[in-house]
Length: 239
Image 1 (cartoon, rainbow, N blue to C red):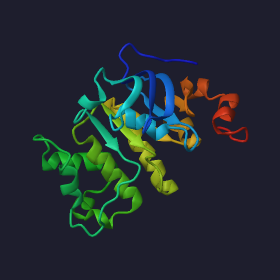
Image 2: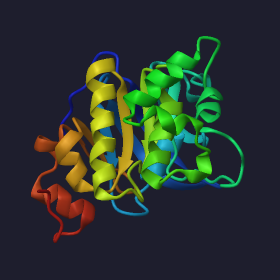
Image 3: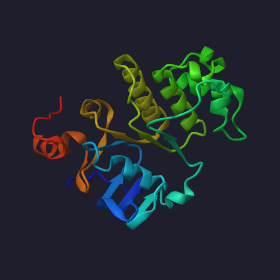
Image 4: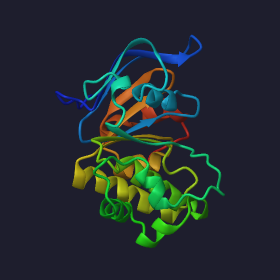
């Protein structure tokens, strides 16, 4: 297992076992998310990727071991991290504008100008702010969810399968936004993905899981042909 750990990682896991109703989904994971990285949690369907992220966010209890986010217990990170869910279910007829929706996640410093600025950062036109959520395309909604996640400038943003359901052009813009947040704001990004082509483009660190930790480290060094075969089957490969 390769490692590129920092002294103060954004997330650290030690012998972490998590699951549901007493049945482990992931066992004995020891890994770190380096501060300032774009880290992808990768693995085949059913491998425990989303479960691992849910444990980092304190959304499911830990069966054994430990997970810390910036040295804090996951229950103490509310308001400190951003989160973009895989699916956002809502009533498309509900009369809430994009501006109102983003403001819901803001704090006392969340001015109208600040919302304008954040929307621009995620690559949307200011005209979108007066639209209702239900009128947005999949790609627009995804970027609005990112805008809401970053409204308080959190040091870490978690994203679960963030590009699912977005067309290719929208996906390219989306990853530009992720790189911008990482490079220009120093935001640590943790994303769940099964798309290997994305890994080669923007990701700086990978955590590969399939019921347990299979590998971890910089993608170029970690995702060998043998390791990708172990993860996805031997007909898979990285471009």
